Structures are given as structure tokens and as C-alpha cells.
Length: 247
Length: 310
Image 1 (cartoon, each protein chain N blue to C red):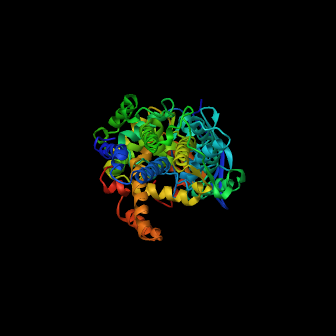
Image 2: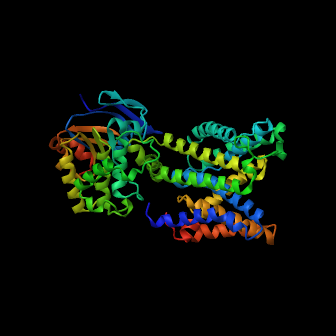
Image 3: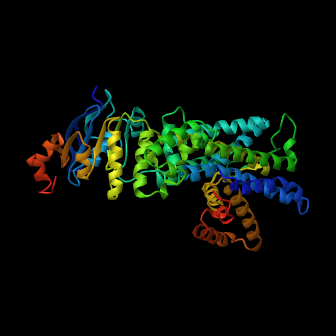
């Protein structure tokens, strides 16, 4: 089964077509990078895949089930989980609680009113394992808002994984990271892509070519090229779209 | 919760428990009356803190639930049903339904629209009260007696009534404290801080917010039942928007999101109002600036000032 199928997705803001007849299949065990110049509609596309924005027409099919009009939380429960370009965490919660809360979302009902959630060993164990994996175990009790930028990016990935995704939508996971932080995150993503299919939006071309199995290029809401990284890199249309920038 | 943060609430409740003893040192019935009102106000404010402080739902119609509770007592009593448990049961049932309906509609909106729509629902109830000619309309209704417990006028004794109110406040406080730390409360707090993040991991905010809204409404309705018994009188004034504003005032004054802050706020509000009204009838003129100063300079309200932690 194709994990994620995008069929003729269209969305306009007024006269501006931000998503123009986008069709894509994301295969099992594939990291599919979507690149494109600023304003190409990459984030809007992720919004429509994750349910934060509604397309005007077209379909999104996840694991054989149409999810085009499902809200974001329902998609997350199906396993279609996203991260955010601008770090989105709960700043007042500890790093551990940020992750434990995502684990809680997958572990039975949250309509429990009496026992103390922060003492639930099962949830804390899952959270601690993930924090360890992302190099944050020593920062578990620190308020998420006080973490460094790079740590927050790692935390965001840990949170997404705790939600038990079957496919990850990553919106510029390296945004704002320093060079060392970016290298760390690339290593993290290299192991992650062996576990589940990933749709990655990224500006950092080094990261894209280090990680992607396939690349699609989005320009003015339209996919102008899609294929293996080296083929896309050689595509004259792509070179033109980037106006001679090094691709 | 840390142990240190327990000191303030324990001291507060210990002090409140001793009030009937301390009252014998002064004008006893006056002291009892005002502290009973403080405890009732604290109960209503506590429930509003659950909404505002933990759920970021700024309801400007919370007094409606006070009205529902108070009128449950008055209307049932006027038909000869004096049983306290019937009064409480009726208040809980009516507030449950009212909260479900108004909450389900209000929670479709955000921010200032949520404030306005809860205000509108509150006013609706207020005008309903004024139009109930059979139950006193605008003027309200004096109760023939307080609620009966198994046919006995137990609440007639002011000290007993005080301790019933105290027990209700303590119970609600412990309940809310447990809720806030529970799975449900953690989700509610998460939604307060970042609803989009919570949706992204699979929580639909609406059902959690609505549940909190209903819980808070029902607790406030209990406060309404107690208020009617304390005053032996009900009127639509219990449900006015000024009352709702007063409740927000109390919660902010005491410190949002600490639960016991609502108790401190209620005490400070009532005592200050009582004190200032001795000097001038325009006491609100002094009162307003005090609140502004507290909001501007004391983070976390009076609770923050007392260093009780959050």
C-alpha cells in the first residue's frame, strides 16, 4: 500500500494559486524531500496534508483512507504526524512532559481525572527513552522554553515520534539551527528515515541531498520536477527556477 | 506539585477552619456572615480559575451558574420542596445542561468572541430571571427558610452553614487540584499553552475544553445554592455581568492558575470592599486602581506576592 497519496490538490488564496494541481505518491521507506524557492507553497502543502489547512479540491489518501477533510488531531491519531517550521512546544512544560503528553495521546483515554499524570511510569519511560535517543536525557526536567534552539528542534522530533507516527511530515526541521546543530539533526534524520516514510521540506540543500531518496521541486504551487536527487539537480527547469543558484 | 507550594493552601484552610472560633472574639454573626460569603465567593472564583487559569477560557458569564444554583433553591422551595439534596441535585443537573449547550456554542469561538458570547449567554439568563414574575421578577425572592437536610433545619445554624460552605470549598479545591494534575488536566493545560501543538499530537481541544467548562459551571452552581442559603434571598442580580466581572476580578487579584489564589482573591476582594465602603460609598474608585496596581506590578497576583508558588 502507498502510505500517502496526494491527488490533484489545489488551493488558492484569492487569485494566488498556492497549490496548483499537486499529485504525489510517497512510497514506503522513502524520504521524499520537497524543495522550492521561498513562497513556493511548501508549508501550505504540508498544512493541507496535516489538516491545518483545507484544500479547495483534490484528495489526500493516507494508508488507503481518505483524510482530505479530517481535522489535524484525527489525522495524528491515524499516524499522520507533523512537525512545525517554527518550533511548537509547550514552553512551560518540562522536556519530559512534552514528550509524555504525546505518548499519552496514544495510550488510552485522557479522560482520567484523578490520578497524577506526571507520575505515570509507562508514559515517563517512553518519554525518557525518546529523550535519550535525541540526546536530551540530561535535560528532561528542564522547562522546554529554556532549551537551546537546537535542543528544541530535537525535542520537537521526539514529540512527533512519541505520537507513534506511521508517516512523518517535517516542515524545515533544521530551520534556524547552527551548523553543528544541523549536522546532529541530519544524523538523527538518517536513522529515522529507516523506520518510517518521511515527507521533508527543507531549505538546506546539503541536508536534502544527504537525506532524500526522491526530491520534488515546487515552484508557484506547482511541481515542476520530481525524481532522484541527481536527476532533479540536473533538470534545466529547476536550475532556472533557482535563478542560477547552486542546487 | 512541590511540597513548598502546599504551605500556603494548608495555612489558608486551617485559618478558614478556625473562623467560627475566632468570630467569638468580635461581632460573631457579622463575622460569620462575611466569611461565609467569602468562602462562597471563593468557591465560584475557584471554578472560574479552572477555566481561565488552566483552560485559557475567559468566561464573562460565569455568574449565570451562580444564578442557576440560587434559583434552584428558590424555585423548588417556593413549591414546597425544601430538601437540600434536591436543591443541589437540581442545581447540578440544570447547570450541566446549560453549560453543555452554551459551552458547545461558545467554544466554537476564540479570544474576544468567546468573552462576548459567554457574556451574552449570561445576560440571557439574567433577563430570564427578571421576567420570572412568579418568582419575584426583578425584585427577587425571599426564602421562607434555608434548605432542609432530611427534614431538619440543620443549616439554620450559621456555624453549621459556614462549615458546609467550608467543606464544599475544600472538596472543590481538592477535586480541582487532582484534575489539574491528572491526564485530563495535563491536556487542558497543554491546550491553554499551545492548542495547535496539541492537535498535532492528536488531541481535539473542543471535548476537553467543554468538559472543563461543564465542571466549572457545576461547581459555580453549588456556590449558587450556598449563596441562596446564606442570604435567604435570591435575585437576578446574582447572575449579572457585573457579578461575572467581579469573579474575574477576584481570580486575577488572587493570581491566575493557582486555585488557592482564588480563595486569597475572594478574601482580599470582600474585606477590602467592606473596609473601603466604611469610608466612602465610592469605594470602587479606590478599588479599581488597586487592582490595576496588582496586575501591573505583582506577577501572579496576591499569591505571587505571598511567594506561595504556582
